[in-house]
Image 1 (spheres, rainbow, N blue to C red):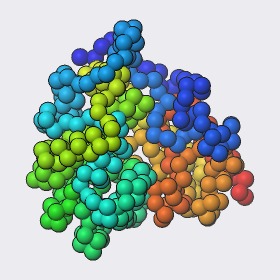
Image 2 (image 1 turned 90 degrees about the vertical axis):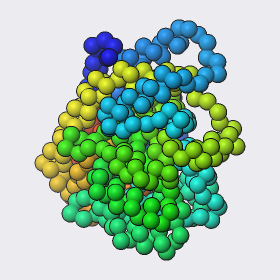
Image 3 (image 1 turned 180 degrees about the vertical axis):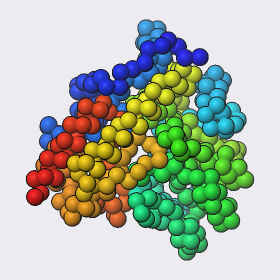
Image 4 (image 1 turned 60 degrees about the horizontal axis):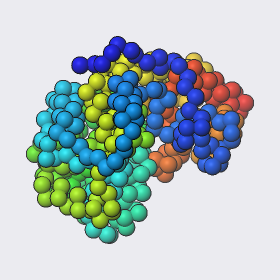
Length: 397
């Protein structure tokens, strides 16, 4: 049951300066102008749900921050969340906790492949997908999504050919897809599963944005959509994006195959990691138990931000096309209508508009004329960003 009735004011601007915020306090260190407006990294400028803050406050007042681990009630909170919202039934022994999903991706690469093995990704995609493959001396294989009529699709023939030609051992799925915002259908997930099952390819499904699918699109947990492939799948989830808890470093990784789970834990042990921190445990459990009302309000606000952005672009900057997102709290902007090279586009965004967005080429070489902007901010901030962008585009002449 939701604790209290206090809903946040998502319009409220909360000053995050001098809080060690990666988004706000490291502008100069990252080589950006001091007055840049940051809408890049995937965290929200919203206060976390009050039940989470209350749980953390109680832990602070207790005053002891020793070694901690999860109990059954932590698992039940997470399991109930996925059962209630996604009709997905988990088992307690599937759960492995990690400090983050990117860490889990790296552990999965090390667990399921050997140096030199091929790992497939689908650019444009979240850029750590590239690094966890390359930094572990695996061979990166790219099967780019097809951008067609304003929407990204999977070329399944190319997907299977890439697997066959490169003897791919592991596929990292982004679901919902970051940055393009696709929420994969059950048909698409089934085709992925059929191909990977047929070729013995492991699948690691990053579902960290699963709670952000717009109402007309339903997110399907990969293991729920393709249960027959359960022996070769790892599903990665976390409350971090959903409730703005990334700095507390608590993620929940679901591994049905007992042998893979044992090897995964062994790989974590080799890297010196053991237990979640206390505050991450408290926050995750409180969020899943009592954060549902907050999330529903947040999703409404994000939809309104998206509506504002769409209307603004159509009316004021028609050269920039919104790639209509089905989920996540990002907007992927097609800026090819400006007729600028990738470097010139970045100069326009940073130097002329004074914005810090994520440049498209970070997500894949073919996306140099795209930019990713985070919608999880007060509308006045998003409005200021769009006004800056409009002025910069007009100055192009």
